[in-house]
Length: 181
Image (tube, rainbow, N blue to C red; front, side, top):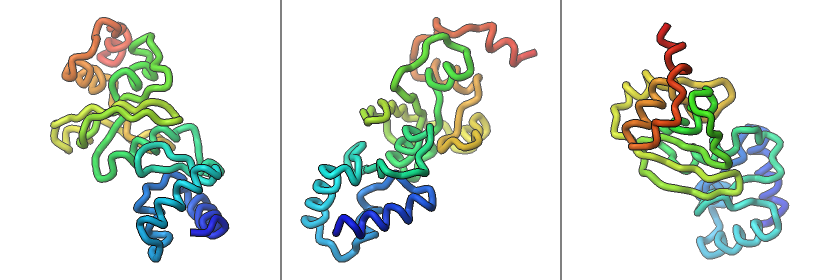
């Protein structure tokens, strides 16, 4: 893979809003490249700053103009393809003002995929598996304009917090009661 050709293809993807790329996506751009050559090319592109490795087999185009404030959510979505993942627990409860603590450089995500912790240059992503049925998850989450991941409702995020055995003492109950009125 030549740097100039990759640059052109990355620019084209960027125009379409794609800047988080799995290795398999890059391999599709260069189908004639052997696995060994792809390994060397990717290592060279990372060393040259053309690509930024954010997790095993996952890269970000650092020059992309389509990047926005939700990069860590785009990375989370790419880490669990084919799974329903949504922002919940402390991350969304902090946004709602239900807890006063603000998770710094950490995104807490519930997922139908496997649990795991991923440290990326954009922050740590904590995935917690849920076995709840898809219709229930869709009912208690919503799309938020511009965000790559769905977000839990206040009540659903509190239920998630209780279910996974997290600290519920930090919840400001008055913030929840306002929704009940």
